[in-house]
Length: 377
Image 1 (spheres, rainbow, N blue to C red):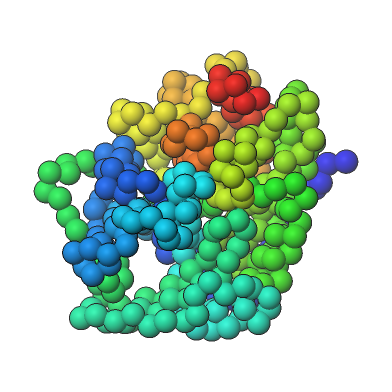
Image 2 (image 1 turned 180 degrees about the horizontal axis):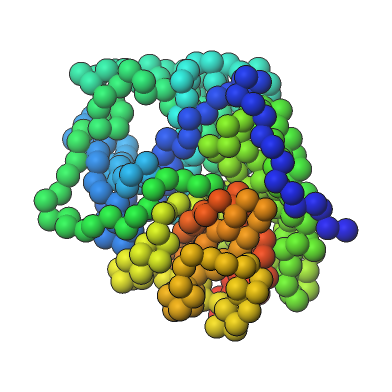
C-alpha cells in the first residue's frame, strides 16, 4: 500500500525547542582540499572566502571555505595520517562530514538535543578573535555525519575564528545563481530509516512531513523508501532514504557499498532561474543525468501550465513536477566523485513544497542506466 504523500503542516515556532535559522555550511572531508576548492569555484561558481591550515596554526589539516550567496561549503583535507579526517577519507572517499546549522544559542541547542538522547560530538565552545566571538557545539547523526550548531550573532569575520580571509585575483569565475541549501538527503542502511526518523523527531524536534514507500519510488529493477524530516519553521529539511527489495541493486545499496556506510547522498541547491544555472554549470563541465526526450512528450499534460518554455527544459534535461502548492523544476548531477556516492541537485521552486514525486521513475531509471554502465546494477 502506498504511504500517503501529503505535505503535513510543520509545528509552530512557539513549540520549537531547537529553532534553526537555516544551514550555516556543509563541510566535506576530501583527499585534496586545494583541488576540491578549485573545482567548486571553477565548475559551480563559488567564490573563495577563508582558509585554515598550517599557516594559521593548524598543523593537521587544510580547510578552504567557498561561498555563493547563502550557500557555504568547507573543503577540509588531512595533511597527516592517523587522525579522524584521514580515516574518514580512507573509508568513505570524499564525502560530507558536517551539516552545520545556524542557531541563536549553540549552548541551548546542545543541551536540548543531548538531554533528549543525542550523542554529543562537541560540547559548547567559544571561539574568539579580533572579529568577535562564535559559539559552536555538535551532536552525532547517521553514519559518521555530525550536526554542528553555529551561533555567530557576535562574530563579524569572514567565516570563524582560526580562519583568515582568502581570495585569489586569478579566479575570474562568475557565480551561477545558486542561492542556499534547499535540503540534504541521507542514505541509511536496511531498516534504519524509521529509527533515524525517530531520532530527528525525539532529539531535534523535527516532523515527518512527507513519506514515500517502495510503490512510490520504484522501477522495474529497484526500489527505495524515503521520509522527509523538517524542522519547525521549515528552513531545514532532511529526507532519509533506505533500500527496499527489488530485482537488482538499488542506488542506495550502491551508495552504501561504495561509501562503506551511511552518509549524505546529495545536497540540493536552490536557484531562481534553473535554466540559466544549469546552462552555466554545463558550460563549465558539470555532468548531469539525462532522461529520454520522450519524458517531455506529455509533460504539460502531466503538470499543467508552466511559465518556462519547453524547449530549453528539454535541451537541458530539466524535470518538472507539480503539487497542490505549485510546481518545481529540478535536475541532478552525476556523482562528483570517482566513487558513485555524492551528487548534487539543482532545484527551483515555483510554489511547490514537495520533492518531485512525479519524476521519481524517470530519474531512477536514468540512475540505473549509470549504475549498469558501472557494472553495479
